[in-house]
Image (cartoon, rainbow, N blue to C red; front, side, top):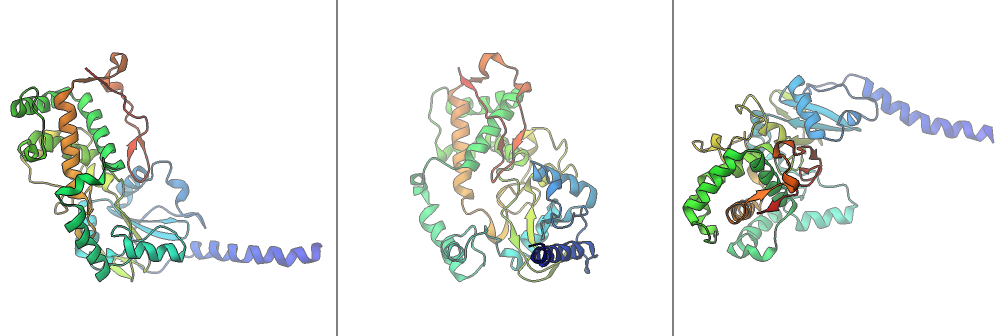
Length: 341
C-alpha cells in the first residue's frame, strides 16, 4: 500500500511545486507595479471584503496603473482618469474584448450570440445587437421593460442617504422642485432637463457611489503597451470607477457630498470625461445609460417633491451607517429605512 502511495504523492507534489517556482521566478517584461503576490494564491488574501477599496489603496502606493494576481490570473487595474482613458479610449479597439463569466463552452457561445454586455469579441454581430437595442429597446417605449434594475435602486438609495445627511442640499433641491412644479404638480420626463440642481445631486451621488465599483472587465487578446507598461496577452483589465470618482488629485474635497461642484461644470457621465465614468466609455459604454439617466432623475425628483422624509424614531441622519456591500452593484451594507411625512 505504502509502495503505491509514494508515486501518487509525487504526482500531486510536482505540479504544485512547478506553480510555486513559476510564481517566485521574476517575470520578464515591464509589468505595471503592484503588491507582491503569494505563490498560487496571488493577491487574493489581500483583497478583503471590499476589493474596490483595497485596490484603490494599492493605487495610492504603486501608481494609477497596477497589476495584481488573482490566483494565476494577471489583472491590470486602472485607478485614475488618465489610465482609464488609455484603456477605454486610446486602446479601445484592441481592448474591447470582454472577459466573460466562467461558463461551459455551450453557454459561452450563447453569450456571444445574444449579449452585448458580455460578448467576448467586438464583431459585426455585436454591432448588430447594439443597433437593435438602440432602435427597439431603448426607445421612448422602454418603460415597458419594467421598474428598474439593481443599479438604479442602489443609486436612488445612496442619493436619499446623502440628501438626508446634507440638509442644505436637500432644502435646495426641494426649493428647485417647488419653484418649477408648485406643491402638487406631477413631474414628467420632459421637465427633467430644466432641473440643474437635481442633475447635480444625481451626478454627485454617482461620483461618490458608482453603481458598479468596477466597470465590466476587458481582456487583452494580444500583448500590448499601456502607459509604457507591457500588458501580456489574456490579461484581464479592470477600471476602478470607485477610485476614480474619489481621486483627491481630481476632485476637491473628494469624500464630501457637494452637488454644487457640478453646477458650473460641463463634466458629464456620457463617457467623454474620464474623471467621471460610472457608466463606462468608448465602444463598450453601458447601452442603457439614457434609460437609467431618465429613470433615476424622475424617481428621485418625485420622492423629494411629494414627500418629506425622516428616519425612524427621529434618528440622527449623521449616524447613518455608510458602509458598502461589495458586489456587482455597490449597495449599502445596511439598507436605508426612512419614513414619509
